[in-house]
Image (cartoon, rainbow, N blue to C red; front, side, top):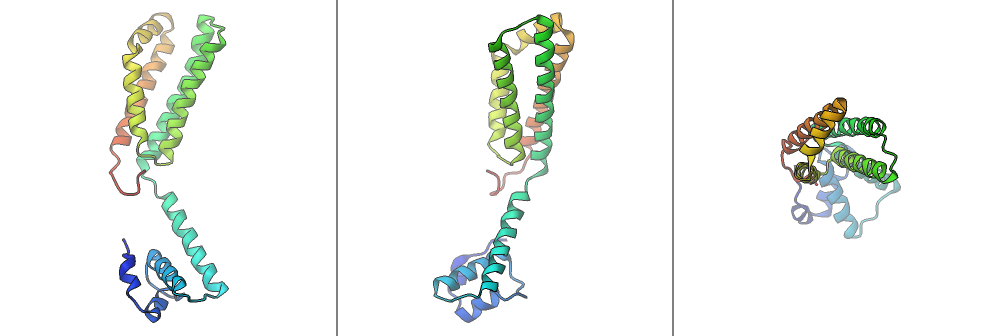
Length: 187
């Protein structure tokens, strides 16, 4: 529920004091606005009133932080699972092929770190991260995913299966992220 500050600014000091009483039934946003308006009008508040308002603001901020749509958490868990499979695949591939290149390992770990970063931002409720995941997924297909997959299936079948599983998991995460309803709270 939204509170219109301009409506509260038209009220008298006596009416606004009703908002900040301890047994007030007004929404926290209205209480906060009433407190700010009275303060701007020069009213002095006791230490107890200041503490109560600060506690109210802290609770309001905590509720806003916690209110993340469940699909963000589910998608994040799936993305983390995909990253975990990526770590397993990285060691399996480099060990099986006997590649000792530091650059190759660095690129592999950088890719995994990127996926973990996407998972973290999804868990925090960043709405725009679904577009980053979609673009990176499309680019991976355009930049030779199928050729690498065919190579892995022929040389290391388990690694090819892991890559396919990662792709399916990331598609699943994308579906979950795009099924989140658009609200003002989403970043």
